[in-house]
Image (cartoon, rainbow, N blue to C red; front, side, top):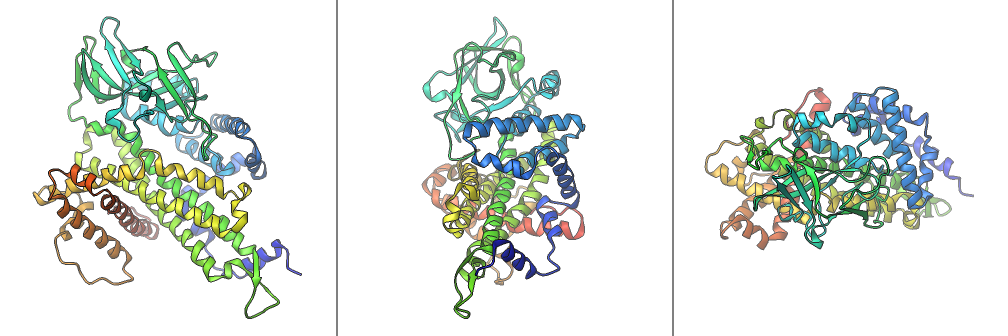
Length: 553
Protein backbone atom coordinates (compact mmCIF):
# COMPACT_ATOMS: atom_id res chain seq x y z
CA UNK A 1 0.00 0.00 0.00
CA UNK A 2 1.33 3.43 -0.90
CA UNK A 3 2.29 5.74 1.93
CA UNK A 4 0.08 8.74 2.60
CA UNK A 5 1.16 12.17 1.43
CA UNK A 6 2.33 13.29 4.88
CA UNK A 7 4.68 10.31 5.10
CA UNK A 8 5.97 10.89 1.58
CA UNK A 9 6.64 14.58 2.27
CA UNK A 10 8.35 13.78 5.59
CA UNK A 11 10.53 11.23 3.82
CA UNK A 12 11.41 13.72 1.10
CA UNK A 13 12.40 16.33 3.67
CA UNK A 14 14.55 13.81 5.53
CA UNK A 15 16.52 13.35 2.32
CA UNK A 16 17.26 17.08 2.17
CA UNK A 17 20.70 18.07 3.47
CA UNK A 18 20.82 19.09 7.12
CA UNK A 19 22.70 22.22 6.10
CA UNK A 20 19.90 23.42 3.81
CA UNK A 21 19.99 27.19 4.31
CA UNK A 22 16.28 27.99 4.53
CA UNK A 23 16.83 31.22 6.41
CA UNK A 24 19.49 32.27 3.91
CA UNK A 25 17.06 31.78 1.03
CA UNK A 26 14.47 33.88 2.87
CA UNK A 27 17.03 36.62 3.41
CA UNK A 28 17.80 36.49 -0.30
CA UNK A 29 14.19 36.77 -1.43
CA UNK A 30 13.46 39.58 1.04
CA UNK A 31 16.66 41.42 0.15
CA UNK A 32 18.29 41.55 3.59
CA UNK A 33 18.12 40.09 7.08
CA UNK A 34 16.49 43.28 8.34
CA UNK A 35 13.79 43.10 5.65
CA UNK A 36 13.13 39.45 6.49
CA UNK A 37 12.78 40.23 10.19
CA UNK A 38 10.42 43.12 9.43
CA UNK A 39 8.30 40.87 7.23
CA UNK A 40 8.12 38.13 9.87
CA UNK A 41 7.27 40.62 12.63
CA UNK A 42 4.47 42.24 10.65
CA UNK A 43 3.22 38.88 9.42
CA UNK A 44 2.57 37.87 13.03
CA UNK A 45 0.72 41.14 13.53
CA UNK A 46 -1.71 40.36 10.72
CA UNK A 47 -2.00 36.63 11.43
CA UNK A 48 -3.32 37.48 14.90
CA UNK A 49 -6.45 38.68 13.09
CA UNK A 50 -6.42 36.53 9.95
CA UNK A 51 -5.22 32.93 9.85
CA UNK A 52 -3.62 31.48 6.75
CA UNK A 53 -6.47 28.95 6.52
CA UNK A 54 -9.12 31.69 6.59
CA UNK A 55 -7.22 33.69 4.00
CA UNK A 56 -7.20 30.73 1.61
CA UNK A 57 -11.00 30.51 1.70
CA UNK A 58 -11.18 33.46 -0.68
CA UNK A 59 -10.18 31.10 -3.49
CA UNK A 60 -13.58 29.39 -3.47
CA UNK A 61 -15.64 32.58 -3.25
CA UNK A 62 -17.41 34.32 -6.13
CA UNK A 63 -15.67 37.33 -7.67
CA UNK A 64 -18.09 39.73 -5.97
CA UNK A 65 -17.47 38.15 -2.57
CA UNK A 66 -13.73 38.17 -3.19
CA UNK A 67 -13.90 41.92 -3.78
CA UNK A 68 -15.86 42.45 -0.57
CA UNK A 69 -13.48 40.30 1.47
CA UNK A 70 -10.42 41.96 -0.08
CA UNK A 71 -11.78 45.41 0.76
CA UNK A 72 -12.53 44.33 4.34
CA UNK A 73 -8.97 43.06 4.61
CA UNK A 74 -7.67 46.39 3.31
CA UNK A 75 -9.68 48.17 6.02
CA UNK A 76 -8.27 45.83 8.66
CA UNK A 77 -4.72 46.50 7.47
CA UNK A 78 -5.17 50.28 7.60
CA UNK A 79 -6.66 50.03 11.12
CA UNK A 80 -3.64 47.99 12.24
CA UNK A 81 -1.32 50.56 10.70
CA UNK A 82 -3.00 53.34 12.68
CA UNK A 83 -3.38 51.28 15.86
CA UNK A 84 0.30 50.31 15.96
CA UNK A 85 1.52 53.63 14.52
CA UNK A 86 3.55 51.91 11.84
CA UNK A 87 6.06 53.84 9.78
CA UNK A 88 5.37 54.39 6.08
CA UNK A 89 7.86 51.63 5.24
CA UNK A 90 6.28 49.12 7.63
CA UNK A 91 2.82 50.10 6.40
CA UNK A 92 3.78 49.23 2.82
CA UNK A 93 5.16 45.87 3.95
CA UNK A 94 1.97 45.04 5.87
CA UNK A 95 -0.11 45.79 2.77
CA UNK A 96 2.09 43.43 0.77
CA UNK A 97 1.71 40.71 3.41
CA UNK A 98 -2.08 40.93 3.21
CA UNK A 99 -1.86 40.15 -0.50
CA UNK A 100 0.67 37.37 0.11
CA UNK A 101 -1.64 35.69 2.63
CA UNK A 102 -4.71 35.65 0.40
CA UNK A 103 -3.13 35.60 -3.04
CA UNK A 104 -5.40 38.48 -4.06
CA UNK A 105 -4.72 42.19 -4.48
CA UNK A 106 -6.85 44.65 -2.54
CA UNK A 107 -9.05 47.21 -4.34
CA UNK A 108 -6.95 49.99 -2.78
CA UNK A 109 -3.69 48.70 -4.30
CA UNK A 110 -3.50 51.43 -6.96
CA UNK A 111 -4.26 54.15 -4.40
CA UNK A 112 -0.95 53.36 -2.69
CA UNK A 113 1.04 52.13 -5.68
CA UNK A 114 0.22 54.89 -8.18
CA UNK A 115 -2.11 57.65 -6.96
CA UNK A 116 -0.18 58.84 -3.90
CA UNK A 117 3.18 58.25 -5.59
CA UNK A 118 2.10 60.32 -8.58
CA UNK A 119 1.05 63.19 -6.33
CA UNK A 120 4.43 63.14 -4.59
CA UNK A 121 6.38 62.96 -7.86
CA UNK A 122 4.81 65.60 -10.12
CA UNK A 123 2.68 67.86 -7.90
CA UNK A 124 4.35 70.57 -5.82
CA UNK A 125 5.05 70.08 -2.10
CA UNK A 126 2.56 72.87 -1.40
CA UNK A 127 -0.16 71.06 -3.35
CA UNK A 128 0.54 67.76 -1.60
CA UNK A 129 0.59 69.44 1.82
CA UNK A 130 -2.80 71.04 1.16
CA UNK A 131 -4.29 67.63 0.37
CA UNK A 132 -2.46 65.67 3.05
CA UNK A 133 -5.32 65.38 5.56
CA UNK A 134 -7.94 63.82 3.24
CA UNK A 135 -5.32 61.44 1.85
CA UNK A 136 -3.99 60.34 5.26
CA UNK A 137 -7.52 59.93 6.65
CA UNK A 138 -8.63 57.92 3.59
CA UNK A 139 -11.36 60.41 2.82
CA UNK A 140 -9.68 60.29 -0.56
CA UNK A 141 -9.19 56.98 -2.33
CA UNK A 142 -7.46 57.58 -5.62
CA UNK A 143 -6.70 55.99 -8.96
CA UNK A 144 -4.40 56.74 -11.90
CA UNK A 145 -6.47 57.54 -15.01
CA UNK A 146 -4.11 57.56 -17.96
CA UNK A 147 -4.92 54.76 -20.43
CA UNK A 148 -7.75 55.41 -22.88
CA UNK A 149 -9.88 53.11 -24.98
CA UNK A 150 -7.97 54.18 -28.09
CA UNK A 151 -4.49 54.75 -26.69
CA UNK A 152 -2.42 52.85 -24.17
CA UNK A 153 1.35 52.82 -24.65
CA UNK A 154 1.24 55.76 -27.10
CA UNK A 155 0.81 58.42 -24.43
CA UNK A 156 1.52 61.37 -26.69
CA UNK A 157 -1.69 60.62 -28.58
CA UNK A 158 -4.04 60.68 -25.59
CA UNK A 159 -7.24 62.54 -26.51
CA UNK A 160 -8.80 63.66 -23.21
CA UNK A 161 -8.63 67.46 -23.07
CA UNK A 162 -8.10 69.97 -20.27
CA UNK A 163 -9.05 73.40 -21.62
CA UNK A 164 -8.12 76.44 -19.54
CA UNK A 165 -10.98 78.90 -19.01
CA UNK A 166 -9.36 82.21 -17.97
CA UNK A 167 -12.68 83.91 -17.14
CA UNK A 168 -13.33 81.51 -14.26
CA UNK A 169 -9.74 80.37 -13.56
CA UNK A 170 -10.63 76.72 -14.13
CA UNK A 171 -9.86 73.79 -16.39
CA UNK A 172 -12.58 71.95 -18.27
CA UNK A 173 -11.90 68.22 -18.55
CA UNK A 174 -13.64 66.54 -21.46
CA UNK A 175 -13.77 63.24 -23.36
CA UNK A 176 -14.29 64.49 -26.94
CA UNK A 177 -14.43 61.08 -28.65
CA UNK A 178 -15.37 57.48 -27.93
CA UNK A 179 -11.70 56.49 -28.01
CA UNK A 180 -10.83 59.20 -25.46
CA UNK A 181 -12.79 57.46 -22.68
CA UNK A 182 -10.41 56.43 -19.90
CA UNK A 183 -10.32 52.65 -19.89
CA UNK A 184 -8.53 50.18 -17.57
CA UNK A 185 -7.55 52.32 -14.54
CA UNK A 186 -7.56 50.12 -11.43
CA UNK A 187 -9.91 51.13 -8.56
CA UNK A 188 -11.81 53.44 -10.92
CA UNK A 189 -14.96 51.33 -11.31
CA UNK A 190 -16.26 51.40 -7.74
CA UNK A 191 -13.51 52.13 -5.19
CA UNK A 192 -11.91 55.49 -5.99
CA UNK A 193 -13.45 58.89 -5.36
CA UNK A 194 -10.42 60.80 -6.68
CA UNK A 195 -8.24 60.42 -9.76
CA UNK A 196 -5.11 61.78 -11.35
CA UNK A 197 -6.27 62.31 -14.93
CA UNK A 198 -3.85 62.64 -17.84
CA UNK A 199 -5.17 65.05 -20.47
CA UNK A 200 -4.02 67.39 -23.23
CA UNK A 201 -3.54 70.93 -21.93
CA UNK A 202 -5.24 73.47 -24.23
CA UNK A 203 -4.72 77.21 -23.63
CA UNK A 204 -6.09 79.79 -26.07
CA UNK A 205 -6.19 77.12 -28.77
CA UNK A 206 -2.59 75.98 -28.24
CA UNK A 207 -1.95 72.33 -27.39
CA UNK A 208 0.78 72.07 -24.74
CA UNK A 209 0.79 68.28 -24.64
CA UNK A 210 -0.26 65.81 -21.96
CA UNK A 211 -0.33 66.96 -18.33
CA UNK A 212 -1.80 65.64 -15.06
CA UNK A 213 -4.86 66.95 -13.21
CA UNK A 214 -6.47 66.04 -9.90
CA UNK A 215 -10.18 65.29 -10.23
CA UNK A 216 -12.88 64.40 -7.71
CA UNK A 217 -14.94 61.54 -9.15
CA UNK A 218 -17.58 60.86 -6.52
CA UNK A 219 -19.42 62.58 -3.70
CA UNK A 220 -17.58 61.98 -0.43
CA UNK A 221 -20.84 61.25 1.42
CA UNK A 222 -22.94 59.25 -1.04
CA UNK A 223 -20.11 57.90 -3.24
CA UNK A 224 -22.23 58.70 -6.29
CA UNK A 225 -20.48 60.07 -9.42
CA UNK A 226 -20.47 63.85 -9.65
CA UNK A 227 -22.26 65.68 -12.51
CA UNK A 228 -20.60 65.21 -15.88
CA UNK A 229 -18.80 62.04 -14.75
CA UNK A 230 -19.75 58.59 -16.02
CA UNK A 231 -17.89 55.63 -14.50
CA UNK A 232 -18.34 51.87 -14.51
CA UNK A 233 -16.75 48.42 -14.62
CA UNK A 234 -15.08 47.14 -17.78
CA UNK A 235 -15.99 43.55 -16.87
CA UNK A 236 -14.29 40.49 -15.40
CA UNK A 237 -10.70 39.76 -16.36
CA UNK A 238 -8.54 36.66 -16.67
CA UNK A 239 -7.55 37.26 -13.03
CA UNK A 240 -6.84 40.24 -10.72
CA UNK A 241 -10.60 40.67 -10.32
CA UNK A 242 -10.44 42.00 -6.76
CA UNK A 243 -9.13 45.23 -8.31
CA UNK A 244 -12.01 47.01 -10.02
CA UNK A 245 -10.68 48.24 -13.36
CA UNK A 246 -13.09 50.72 -14.89
CA UNK A 247 -13.88 53.37 -17.47
CA UNK A 248 -14.38 57.12 -17.16
CA UNK A 249 -16.19 59.50 -19.51
CA UNK A 250 -15.95 63.23 -18.82
CA UNK A 251 -18.54 65.72 -20.04
CA UNK A 252 -17.03 69.20 -19.60
CA UNK A 253 -16.16 68.78 -15.93
CA UNK A 254 -14.69 71.88 -14.23
CA UNK A 255 -11.78 71.79 -11.78
CA UNK A 256 -9.76 74.62 -10.17
CA UNK A 257 -6.54 75.73 -11.87
CA UNK A 258 -4.69 74.69 -8.71
CA UNK A 259 -5.55 71.04 -9.46
CA UNK A 260 -3.01 70.83 -12.28
CA UNK A 261 0.32 69.15 -11.46
CA UNK A 262 2.65 72.14 -11.25
CA UNK A 263 6.03 70.83 -10.13
CA UNK A 264 7.42 70.91 -13.68
CA UNK A 265 4.89 73.07 -15.56
CA UNK A 266 2.67 75.96 -14.47
CA UNK A 267 -0.29 77.90 -15.78
CA UNK A 268 -0.63 81.44 -14.43
CA UNK A 269 -3.91 83.20 -13.68
CA UNK A 270 -3.82 84.90 -17.09
CA UNK A 271 -3.18 81.60 -18.88
CA UNK A 272 0.56 82.00 -19.32
CA UNK A 273 2.17 78.58 -19.64
CA UNK A 274 5.73 77.95 -18.51
CA UNK A 275 7.99 75.04 -17.71
CA UNK A 276 10.35 74.90 -14.76
CA UNK A 277 14.01 75.45 -15.60
CA UNK A 278 15.61 72.15 -16.54
CA UNK A 279 12.30 70.30 -16.29
CA UNK A 280 12.24 67.06 -18.23
CA UNK A 281 8.96 65.94 -19.76
CA UNK A 282 9.81 62.30 -19.03
CA UNK A 283 9.37 63.00 -15.31
CA UNK A 284 5.64 63.35 -15.92
CA UNK A 285 5.55 59.59 -16.53
CA UNK A 286 7.85 58.67 -13.64
CA UNK A 287 5.04 56.74 -11.94
CA UNK A 288 5.06 54.28 -14.84
CA UNK A 289 8.79 53.72 -14.35
CA UNK A 290 8.16 53.00 -10.67
CA UNK A 291 5.43 50.52 -11.54
CA UNK A 292 7.65 48.68 -14.03
CA UNK A 293 10.25 48.05 -11.34
CA UNK A 294 7.39 46.98 -9.05
CA UNK A 295 6.29 44.48 -11.71
CA UNK A 296 9.78 42.99 -11.86
CA UNK A 297 9.51 42.18 -8.15
CA UNK A 298 5.96 40.94 -8.69
CA UNK A 299 7.20 38.62 -11.44
CA UNK A 300 9.83 37.15 -9.11
CA UNK A 301 7.34 36.59 -6.32
CA UNK A 302 4.62 35.12 -8.55
CA UNK A 303 7.02 32.75 -10.32
CA UNK A 304 8.49 31.65 -6.98
CA UNK A 305 5.00 30.77 -5.73
CA UNK A 306 4.30 28.68 -8.83
CA UNK A 307 7.67 26.95 -8.53
CA UNK A 308 7.02 26.21 -4.85
CA UNK A 309 3.64 24.64 -5.66
CA UNK A 310 5.10 22.55 -8.48
CA UNK A 311 8.10 21.33 -6.47
CA UNK A 312 6.01 20.45 -3.40
CA UNK A 313 3.46 18.63 -5.56
CA UNK A 314 6.25 16.76 -7.34
CA UNK A 315 7.80 15.75 -4.02
CA UNK A 316 4.66 13.99 -2.74
CA UNK A 317 3.03 12.81 -5.96
CA UNK A 318 3.72 9.14 -6.74
CA UNK A 319 3.27 8.22 -10.37
CA UNK A 320 4.49 5.20 -12.33
CA UNK A 321 6.51 2.14 -11.38
CA UNK A 322 10.26 2.19 -10.98
CA UNK A 323 12.23 0.48 -13.74
CA UNK A 324 14.70 -0.83 -11.15
CA UNK A 325 12.16 -1.63 -8.42
CA UNK A 326 8.96 -2.73 -10.19
CA UNK A 327 6.88 -2.85 -7.02
CA UNK A 328 7.73 0.68 -5.93
CA UNK A 329 6.10 3.86 -7.20
CA UNK A 330 8.26 6.78 -8.25
CA UNK A 331 8.09 10.28 -6.85
CA UNK A 332 7.37 12.62 -9.74
CA UNK A 333 10.26 14.85 -8.66
CA UNK A 334 12.66 11.94 -9.19
CA UNK A 335 11.93 11.91 -12.91
CA UNK A 336 14.63 13.72 -14.87
CA UNK A 337 12.02 15.34 -17.10
CA UNK A 338 10.22 16.80 -14.07
CA UNK A 339 13.44 18.21 -12.65
CA UNK A 340 14.16 19.69 -16.08
CA UNK A 341 10.82 21.49 -15.97
CA UNK A 342 10.45 22.74 -12.41
CA UNK A 343 13.93 23.26 -10.94
CA UNK A 344 15.04 25.94 -13.45
CA UNK A 345 11.94 27.91 -12.46
CA UNK A 346 13.31 28.09 -8.91
CA UNK A 347 16.61 29.42 -10.23
CA UNK A 348 14.85 31.92 -12.49
CA UNK A 349 12.81 33.32 -9.62
CA UNK A 350 16.01 33.85 -7.59
CA UNK A 351 17.60 35.64 -10.54
CA UNK A 352 14.64 38.00 -10.91
CA UNK A 353 14.59 38.58 -7.14
CA UNK A 354 18.25 39.65 -7.24
CA UNK A 355 17.57 42.07 -10.10
CA UNK A 356 14.50 43.38 -8.32
CA UNK A 357 16.41 44.16 -5.12
CA UNK A 358 19.19 45.99 -6.96
CA UNK A 359 16.87 48.12 -9.06
CA UNK A 360 14.24 48.70 -6.39
CA UNK A 361 17.03 50.32 -4.38
CA UNK A 362 17.95 52.33 -7.46
CA UNK A 363 14.29 53.28 -7.98
CA UNK A 364 13.94 54.36 -4.35
CA UNK A 365 16.92 56.68 -4.72
CA UNK A 366 15.60 58.07 -8.01
CA UNK A 367 12.15 58.60 -6.47
CA UNK A 368 13.65 60.56 -3.59
CA UNK A 369 15.51 62.74 -6.08
CA UNK A 370 12.36 63.36 -8.15
CA UNK A 371 10.34 64.18 -5.03
CA UNK A 372 12.90 66.54 -3.49
CA UNK A 373 15.42 67.73 -6.10
CA UNK A 374 14.37 66.84 -9.66
CA UNK A 375 16.92 69.28 -11.12
CA UNK A 376 19.70 66.98 -9.91
CA UNK A 377 18.66 64.20 -12.30
CA UNK A 378 20.59 64.42 -15.56
CA UNK A 379 18.98 63.49 -18.86
CA UNK A 380 21.27 60.50 -19.47
CA UNK A 381 20.50 58.89 -16.11
CA UNK A 382 16.78 59.42 -16.64
CA UNK A 383 16.97 57.90 -20.12
CA UNK A 384 18.89 54.90 -18.79
CA UNK A 385 16.41 54.38 -15.96
CA UNK A 386 13.59 54.41 -18.48
CA UNK A 387 15.36 51.98 -20.83
CA UNK A 388 16.28 49.60 -18.01
CA UNK A 389 12.77 49.64 -16.52
CA UNK A 390 11.29 48.74 -19.91
CA UNK A 391 13.84 46.00 -20.62
CA UNK A 392 13.54 44.42 -17.18
CA UNK A 393 9.75 44.50 -17.26
CA UNK A 394 9.80 42.78 -20.65
CA UNK A 395 12.33 40.11 -19.67
CA UNK A 396 10.89 39.39 -16.22
CA UNK A 397 7.25 39.20 -17.31
CA UNK A 398 8.03 36.94 -20.28
CA UNK A 399 10.04 34.55 -18.11
CA UNK A 400 7.44 34.63 -15.34
CA UNK A 401 4.40 33.86 -17.49
CA UNK A 402 6.25 31.14 -19.38
CA UNK A 403 7.53 29.62 -16.13
CA UNK A 404 4.12 29.52 -14.46
CA UNK A 405 2.62 27.71 -17.43
CA UNK A 406 5.46 25.17 -17.32
CA UNK A 407 4.77 24.63 -13.60
CA UNK A 408 1.05 24.23 -14.27
CA UNK A 409 1.67 21.55 -16.88
CA UNK A 410 4.17 19.84 -14.57
CA UNK A 411 1.36 19.31 -12.06
CA UNK A 412 -0.76 17.38 -14.55
CA UNK A 413 -4.53 17.54 -14.18
CA UNK A 414 -4.22 18.97 -10.67
CA UNK A 415 -2.52 22.04 -12.12
CA UNK A 416 -5.66 22.72 -14.14
CA UNK A 417 -7.73 23.09 -10.97
CA UNK A 418 -8.33 26.54 -9.51
CA UNK A 419 -7.64 25.03 -6.09
CA UNK A 420 -4.01 24.44 -7.10
CA UNK A 421 -3.53 28.20 -7.23
CA UNK A 422 -1.66 27.94 -10.53
CA UNK A 423 -4.42 29.21 -12.88
CA UNK A 424 -4.88 32.30 -10.68
CA UNK A 425 -1.12 32.88 -10.56
CA UNK A 426 -0.90 32.54 -14.34
CA UNK A 427 -3.75 34.97 -14.88
CA UNK A 428 -2.33 37.41 -12.34
CA UNK A 429 1.11 37.38 -13.97
CA UNK A 430 -0.32 37.76 -17.48
CA UNK A 431 -1.11 41.41 -16.76
CA UNK A 432 2.62 42.16 -16.39
CA UNK A 433 3.07 41.49 -20.12
CA UNK A 434 0.59 44.23 -21.02
CA UNK A 435 0.36 46.72 -18.14
CA UNK A 436 2.48 49.90 -18.20
CA UNK A 437 3.34 49.23 -21.83
CA UNK A 438 2.80 46.07 -23.89
CA UNK A 439 6.10 44.24 -24.15
CA UNK A 440 6.63 44.49 -27.90
CA UNK A 441 5.76 48.20 -27.75
CA UNK A 442 7.93 49.32 -24.84
CA UNK A 443 10.88 47.23 -26.01
CA UNK A 444 11.12 49.77 -28.85
CA UNK A 445 11.76 52.47 -26.25
CA UNK A 446 14.70 50.52 -24.87
CA UNK A 447 16.17 50.12 -28.36
CA UNK A 448 15.64 53.80 -29.15
CA UNK A 449 17.45 54.87 -25.99
CA UNK A 450 20.32 52.46 -26.59
CA UNK A 451 20.82 53.80 -30.13
CA UNK A 452 20.88 57.37 -28.83
CA UNK A 453 23.45 56.48 -26.19
CA UNK A 454 25.61 54.65 -28.74
CA UNK A 455 25.49 57.75 -30.92
CA UNK A 456 26.52 59.91 -27.97
CA UNK A 457 29.36 57.51 -27.17
CA UNK A 458 30.69 57.66 -30.73
CA UNK A 459 30.63 61.47 -30.54
CA UNK A 460 32.80 61.40 -27.43
CA UNK A 461 30.12 62.33 -24.91
CA UNK A 462 31.01 61.20 -21.39
CA UNK A 463 28.75 58.37 -20.28
CA UNK A 464 28.03 57.04 -16.77
CA UNK A 465 30.01 54.05 -15.41
CA UNK A 466 27.13 51.68 -16.17
CA UNK A 467 27.76 52.26 -19.89
CA UNK A 468 31.49 51.62 -19.88
CA UNK A 469 30.74 48.36 -21.70
CA UNK A 470 30.28 50.49 -24.84
CA UNK A 471 34.09 50.65 -25.03
CA UNK A 472 33.99 47.02 -26.17
CA UNK A 473 31.29 47.68 -28.75
CA UNK A 474 33.59 47.91 -31.78
CA UNK A 475 36.37 45.66 -30.53
CA UNK A 476 36.99 42.01 -31.42
CA UNK A 477 34.96 39.40 -29.60
CA UNK A 478 37.19 37.91 -26.88
CA UNK A 479 37.56 34.22 -26.22
CA UNK A 480 34.81 33.31 -23.81
CA UNK A 481 34.45 30.54 -21.28
CA UNK A 482 31.23 28.54 -21.20
CA UNK A 483 31.13 29.03 -17.42
CA UNK A 484 31.54 32.83 -17.47
CA UNK A 485 27.83 33.53 -17.66
CA UNK A 486 28.07 37.26 -17.08
CA UNK A 487 30.54 37.66 -19.95
CA UNK A 488 28.35 35.53 -22.23
CA UNK A 489 25.29 37.69 -21.54
CA UNK A 490 27.35 40.87 -21.92
CA UNK A 491 28.86 40.01 -25.28
CA UNK A 492 25.64 38.63 -26.68
CA UNK A 493 24.04 41.98 -25.90
CA UNK A 494 26.97 43.95 -27.35
CA UNK A 495 26.96 41.83 -30.49
CA UNK A 496 23.24 42.43 -31.06
CA UNK A 497 23.59 46.14 -30.29
CA UNK A 498 26.49 46.44 -32.75
CA UNK A 499 24.45 44.69 -35.44
CA UNK A 500 21.35 46.80 -34.87
CA UNK A 501 23.36 50.03 -34.80
CA UNK A 502 24.87 49.09 -38.17
CA UNK A 503 21.41 48.24 -39.51
CA UNK A 504 19.94 51.52 -38.27
CA UNK A 505 22.62 53.50 -40.11
CA UNK A 506 21.00 52.51 -43.41
CA UNK A 507 17.68 54.16 -42.50
CA UNK A 508 16.75 57.87 -42.43
CA UNK A 509 16.07 57.80 -38.67
CA UNK A 510 16.25 55.44 -35.68
CA UNK A 511 12.45 55.33 -35.50
CA UNK A 512 12.20 54.12 -39.10
CA UNK A 513 14.91 51.53 -38.43
CA UNK A 514 13.11 50.23 -35.34
CA UNK A 515 9.68 50.03 -36.97
CA UNK A 516 11.17 48.21 -39.95
CA UNK A 517 13.04 45.72 -37.74
CA UNK A 518 10.68 45.21 -34.80
CA UNK A 519 11.59 41.57 -34.17
CA UNK A 520 15.30 42.37 -33.95
CA UNK A 521 14.50 45.40 -31.78
CA UNK A 522 12.48 43.28 -29.35
CA UNK A 523 15.21 40.65 -29.19
CA UNK A 524 17.82 43.33 -28.47
CA UNK A 525 15.76 44.76 -25.59
CA UNK A 526 15.10 41.28 -24.22
CA UNK A 527 18.81 40.43 -24.27
CA UNK A 528 19.62 43.75 -22.63
CA UNK A 529 17.21 42.84 -19.83
CA UNK A 530 18.79 39.41 -19.42
CA UNK A 531 22.28 40.89 -19.45
CA UNK A 532 21.11 43.20 -16.66
CA UNK A 533 19.97 40.12 -14.70
CA UNK A 534 23.45 38.67 -14.92
CA UNK A 535 25.14 41.83 -13.65
CA UNK A 536 22.47 42.29 -10.98
CA UNK A 537 23.11 38.77 -9.71
CA UNK A 538 26.79 39.63 -9.30
CA UNK A 539 25.96 42.97 -7.70
CA UNK A 540 23.43 41.57 -5.25
CA UNK A 541 25.59 38.55 -4.38
CA UNK A 542 28.49 40.91 -3.75
CA UNK A 543 26.33 42.97 -1.43
CA UNK A 544 25.14 39.88 0.42
CA UNK A 545 28.73 38.66 0.92
CA UNK A 546 30.25 41.97 1.95
CA UNK A 547 27.18 43.75 3.39
CA UNK A 548 27.85 46.80 1.27
CA UNK A 549 26.23 48.20 -1.87
CA UNK A 550 27.57 47.24 -5.28
CA UNK A 551 26.80 49.52 -8.18
CA UNK A 552 24.51 47.94 -10.81
CA UNK A 553 26.34 47.75 -14.13
